[in-house]
Length: 346
Ligand code: AHM
Ligand code: MG
Image 1 (tube, helix red, strand yellow):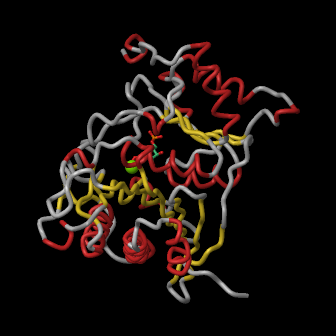
Image 2 (cartoon, helix red, strand yellow):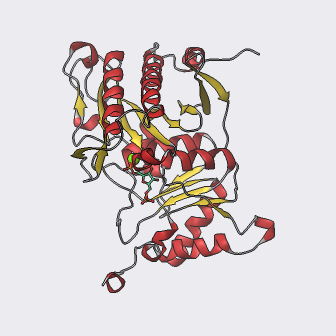
Image 3 (cartoon, rainbow, N blue to C red):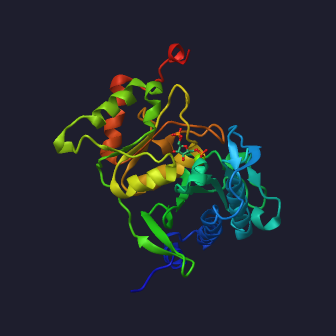
């Protein structure tokens, strides 16, 4: 049986982008090379003393793990050396990284990324991932990347993808012409096409949300969760609850099987927890390309939200189209504002 490697596939599809002259091809190839290097370290994390906190916090005040820092550096260096990327905004860095060197200053693209999402799961062997978006720069070529390159609408993404470091390692990406998944064959060190033209079922039976936070959720979410748990044979309810707490893993499962993932506004996170630029926009582009839907639970498509700052958080409702539509109806009917739980906290 013949296999198609990621590199072959990317080159084949280059014709879809007559204007791109191979630039996007090189960028995606460099992403996949860095992913292999990060994958190697993730796999041996239990063997060497690379686990644990490095003693620094990231801009969100969260402890950074050593592998977060490692992944951040690997992706930044790889993209810089591609010559196609003039700058990067990463969840791990407070400010944009815009390259000084002549070669990357000629690059026409910028990348926003979460180099290692779900890092609190590293030391318990749960799947983690890398999430990325690629945009064409708006600042002039030949100069350093500028802040305005990074706060573009999600609709301006030219490509988006993720790598899941799980029981196998996969890269799933879209350039706006469908979604394809590649599994890393460790024996040859190549990502091979394993999931062509991924489409998410319009309805599913899985809901994914951190239900321990129920008390802090808006009334619309509480009522939707009750609906998910009620018996109704024709619609497959009660649904199955699945929540790993690692966005890439939860998203990947729902993408393949059908389902809904929600990280809403809550009393703890008045804007939601997940970041528009590093997590929600790329996943929104992928899910839409797979026939699904991504909104903020208030009727606005994620990719239509106007980014205001690099590390902006937004509520995130993503998955099978019919399930997201139903969740939206509940939000509209019962309300999307977080409850005041100050009494309960006392
Ligand atoms: P991180 O970027 O700091 O790793 O946090 C993001 C992660 C997501 O992978 C996951 O969906 C979410 O946080 C889980 O949050 P919670 O533990 O509040 O349910
Ligand atoms: Mg993250």
